[in-house]
Length: 448
Image (cartoon, rainbow, N blue to C red; front, side):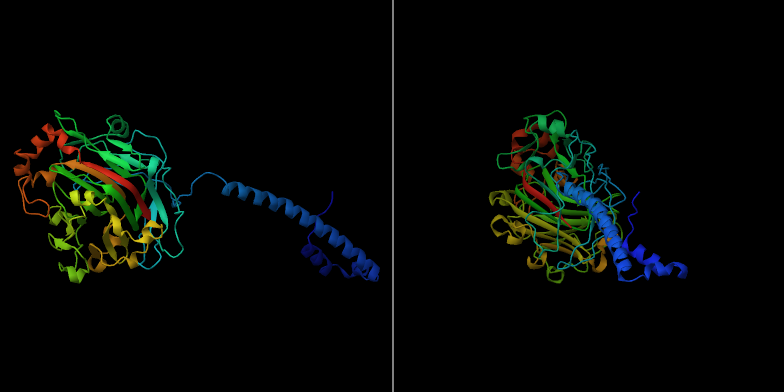
């Protein structure tokens, strides 16, 4: 058997040779030459063996990088799915899990954490979230944000749970699973590649009207969430929202990005928390926002009748008919250590860094809403969020203001406008009135 000794071992043997044997290596240059040739031969053999070993490793790496598998940002402790446990927030809750929060400002590199599940609890689909990606193909090194999840096109509904339980906000809706939503024509991907989520328009229903509520299986703590929507539900009786929340509501917090009721024309963004979270002022100039504070400065759900800290937009193209007539736009929610902010960009004013996949919130100007960390540290009051779409009908908000007028877009009450005395009666017997009660979404992207 050939001994494949390396040069370091050979030198060690030479240095430790007993004096009685040392004369073997002192017989002139010829003997030294023989030793050198043997060492070179052996080192060449070792190099050959190393090439063989490393060639296999390099070949294996090439196989790994050419694999069609997608890379996911998943912590080592494993995967968890959001199963949507009920609660009592402004739009109900769902449970999910993740750890840590980002420690950055708008211009710093985000370091939030995230998890995702390859299964959809509560969904009739067994599809994995193939619409997700670890990085954006259009991303730039100039952006501190990297794409964690993207929901768009034919695979939009993959990676979402379909909630099919009672509505936690007591609406006159029956949320359905994915198979039922498909067979009932409540969801589809249209010819433009946009995701559609509808409310049932059957003329009369004996009970509640069918609708859709979906929750991401992936969860995140700290993020930049972008929604590009072309159309949102509107009209008397509707209460749509795009929002997020964490486990054990309100302990994990809730962030309502898009929300309103009935004929509203101005969006309201709101946070709901456990005890101890407040905003430092109700002044728009102090908060450095373009919107207006509604409801007060205490964000604790239990102490405000679940109202939280709301901020409304001043533009009438941010919600409802005005939003839809303008072709929609992009909503952006940034959650970082310094606070939580929401921006809206109409269709013709979307920043180029958003469309290029390299978002730069530091250059977006004044947000519509902002909840600074001054008296509400996000790492204390928000964690483990899932993004949620839903359209409920009537319920604790839309139903309770059925007879109210005076809010932007609601110059006339729904009772007056429809001639129907109650929201529940209207929902049961006027299905054609819900033709505009649908979401049309280009994409949802979650960056970290």
